[in-house]
Image (cartoon, rainbow, N blue to C red; front, side, top):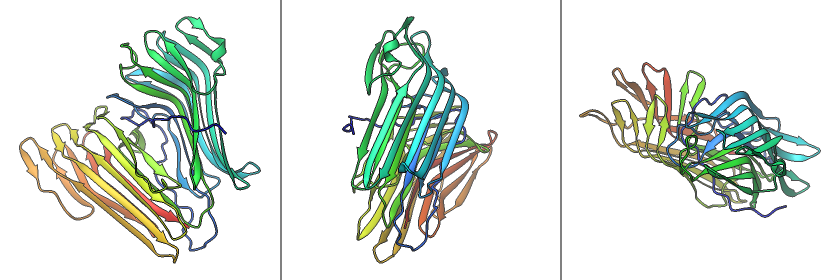
Length: 408
């Protein structure tokens, strides 16, 4: 196994044209049985923007949130991924699935594109990337790879890059540089996750296609498997997500989830301001997760923090939420959630903030607001600090989502 490489997580900023995202936690085991369970999690994105203000984030998304189901899968295809109103990847297909067979227990995530193109600066055709995380015979392992049918830098074909080695850095005149076949894996005491990205674009030169200073991962995959445990911690958090009817138009920003906790460490995922095209402007967003699985107690906590939101003349102040879950060895389970919204105003009119769960506030002609929207189950709790139903656009924006639970 290769040692983990230096890896800076790519954070989702905004989103347009996402199809078929599966963003809910799947509780497939809630019994009191002490039989060991495995945790499966994975995703595949067409594109994902890392830095800067951009009208794009995770696109063409396939995702399985933490589940104990070894037959869970998600698939998405026939879409074009755009960044800065430019088509970056065409005819993208993504998929992720869990398995329990002769290979062991694991997750495979993959993504393909007919081509990845940045104007006349870069052309990658027949792109395929995949990663797999496996637990077999008491051992954790992973694989990851990327291949192309053809590679052109400017007008020059580069056959040597068709099967690039891991983390191959290449200069692209007029753009900056790219990293091909970015792969790695991180093993913990409770499991392993692996990642593979076909190409990461670093635009450090001013150009017409990708804003300078913005980094974009194209065909980004992740797979995660836990060791068997008597209690598994699960959950997720994100800053914002927008839907028109059942179509996801802006995927989860600063998204984090877990199947294995964080070994008691707090992990933070942050992005700058977010633009949800034609709907809203969102200030800086960050989420945190902290969880541990042990013989005495398993516990997890997720938080979400949003600097503020503007929808037309509607201005909303800082928004926060948190969700926690824990289970002790004697079978006791605890769940908790909090949320807050600092202020709501339209022009000079300031509205009084409600303090009860699932309270609504109607802003005539603009939106209906729902505060502290809580879903509570036997071993799982989720909270949306604020849900904005935008009149006239038939759009629902979820702000400040946190969720946590235990399985086993």
